[in-house]
Image (tube, rainbow over all chains, first blue to last red; front, side, top):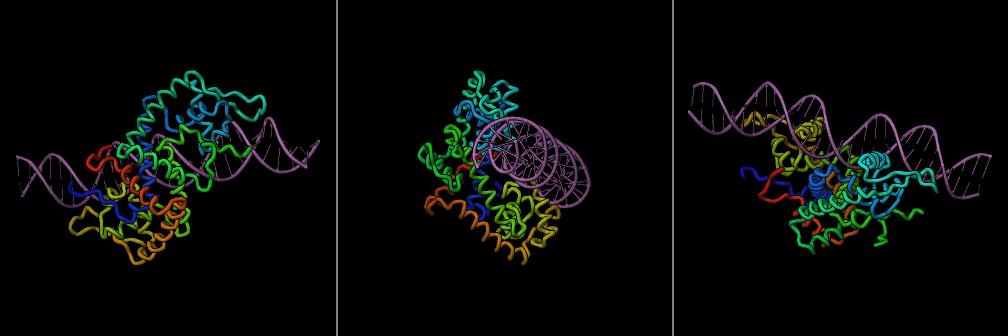
Length: 152
Length: 152
DNA sequence: AGGGAACGTTGGACCGCCCAACATTTTTGC
DNA sequence: GCAAAAATGTTGGGCGGTCCAACGTTCCCT
């Protein structure tokens, strides 16, 4: 320990800086955990959202997860190629694509959820369960600027 | 139906996801605040670190802020071009570049620090001061992979 | 019927992160 | 002393994530 990795106080005290560092570590941990299944963070999030929301359009998925429509196309393309979801035109609105999870997707989701949860457990290993819950609460209130909390 | 920005529960409860969203918002707020001064987040961080650590080599800066040496070269180049810092060879170790803040850099730093603090205040506007301090504490313990274990 | 809006899609740009390589210089070992 | 090993600064490129502009298709509202 010749030179301690000393983070300047002014920077260390900035929530934006800490959020960036913590998010980078979280992203890295989750990405490494999901790499074994050939899944990336966004793919897992979309797959999980599809499973929870049922047949849903890509636009709704993008709004729910704050993902750009452009990236959503790529993600759904990958998921369709792996036969984890199906993309069929919505008969009631032929603009929309009804994205539905497949049985294989459900099975994969079960595994990736375990891996994701494990990675998040490692991410918050230094926290007590109560602290973890409070962190989630604080982050939720920070992540959404003025959005009213609904549908809990 | 515009009231559909519904975040799935399984995703919303993941610290990694919340960290990503909160970090994205924090980065956006700070970037917008600093855009008026022609500064970016990393430039401001490096400038602040130089001001606090005094004459310091680029390698130490990179280790302190977890910035790749490659990117550090670009950042210091920009700061030197704007005459906010000076880069002179260290007489005691001619491999190193002693980076020092300039009077103009000090003046700019004062403004960017105000802007950065204001952006962080807006970022944590939904939190009480006590909650803000606790968030900083929790994030600090999360962002550090382990005070002794420094790998990957 | 027509105009505005939404949807999916394509293309591209920017930024942050990481790895490999090299010349110069310091430090270490013999 | 001197050669080998390590460190520093620098350059180059690649990868992944985010975002914006545009376009054709389709729906909704007046």
